[in-house]
Length: 177
Image (cartoon, rainbow, N blue to C red):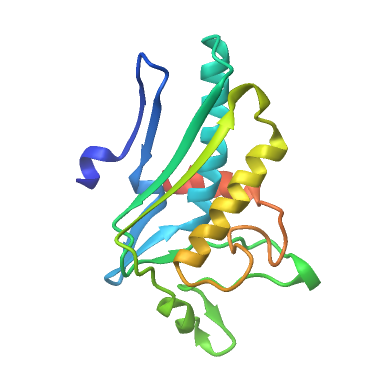
């Protein structure tokens, strides 16, 4: 129930943290269900830092597991790619955007065939660094891209690069959520 789940952060006594974000990362346009790639991966990055801060402040610095769950992915697509220039000053096309041939319709066919997706990462709280968070974000973005039949570097990073567009993420987060 999208209205019920909107956003929430749950903290359990055993140290478990759960964050859900339906309206920001999931949408529907012209009957086509889509996940907002850039918002999803940026939220993963933010959650990694939030979890580290909460657990560290509670005195916990040992191992943990990060699960990224997307529910209802079958026949959905990825949208909201990085608009920042990357390699050779090029940018990604977005499925709902226009290219020189009109609407980027070929991207509308890159649908996920799995009903749900779960990615799992083991990490040690005290060793989480910017490099580790970025590596998890890039790996998660790569795996999700493959699940949605993308045969390129993650499109939520700048074109053919490993640079995440944090300013674009912040602007989207402020306007959509």
